[in-house]
Image 1: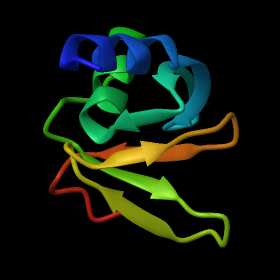
Image 2: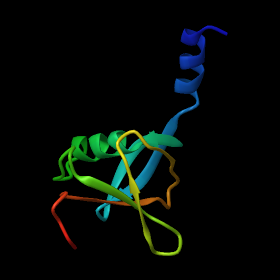
Image 3: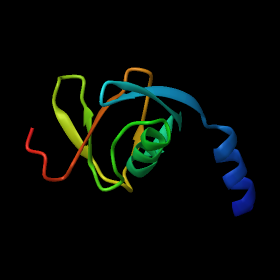
Length: 90
């Protein structure tokens, strides 16, 4: 399989997943997506965040896990993320 064929297979295996970012529903192409792609999708869909914001995923036990721009996460309809300015201490 060539790299072009591999890319095509990966693209076909993606489907829309509605996640939550800062309490707003955001559609991403999942099930695997990068932190940067989550922020880009949120911005494109009207959230007032910036690409340099810190992104965190809310875990099942209520804690937060920092997601870097290059980190790939598997998302579901239950995935919740928070995007905050780097200097936000809340």
